Length: 135
Image 1 (tube, rainbow, N blue to C red):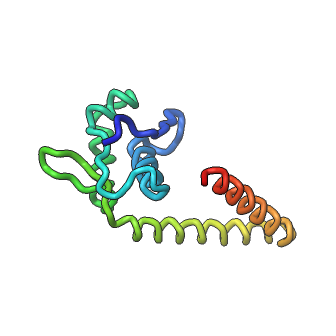
Image 2: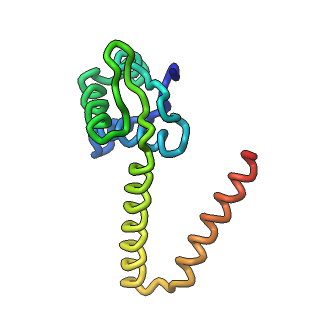
């Protein structure tokens, strides 16, 4: 089990804190930071780490379990589900929808397709360079 979970909470954000926790756990699971069947911190520990109400964390954990991101074992804690494939598929679909929406907006404001392609290529190239550094 991890001693802490690197979730950043923005208290000024319009996104509710429990949703920020949900998003943080999902992102960590998708990125492989949290492995399938890895235990996540108990509510009390995360309460101390983040300095927020335990009911907020309980709400986030309940929603994560409802979505199949985590599962709980009575008396043992909460664990990352091994079923992150559907979560990854949903995230990819969300990204593709956002990309299409942004492309349509760029077209609406007469931003040439070549500029968008250049931005995408730069993002992928910098990602590949970062990945090579990790190997």
